[in-house]
Length: 83
Image 1 (tube, helix red, strand yellow):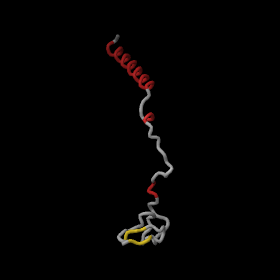
Image 2 (image 1 turned 120 degrees about the vertical axis):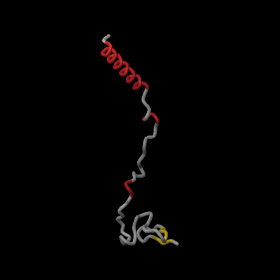
Image 3 (image 1 turned 45 degrees about the vertical axis):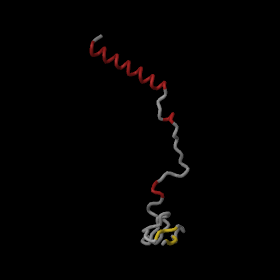
Image 4 (image 1 turned 90 degrees about the vertical axis):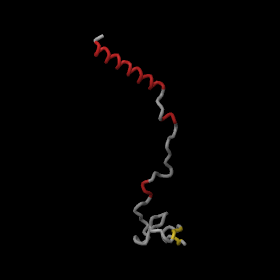
C-alpha cells in the first residue's frame, strides 16, 4: 500500500519514514526544505573527460624522465666511485 507525498506528489510506500523523492516526512511537516537535498551529488550537466590520453604519459615525457634518471645515476656513480 502506498500514498502520495503531499509535497512533491511522488508515490511513498506506507512503511516509509520519508518521501524518497523530496525527503519530506511527518515529523518535519512535509517541509519543502529537506536536510539531504541532493546529497551533494554533481549536477546532471557535469561531464567528465574519460579519454585515455589524459591518463597516459606521452612518449616525450617518458624520454625526458629517462634522460633525467640516467644523468642522476651517472652523477651518483661518479660521486660514490670517484670516476
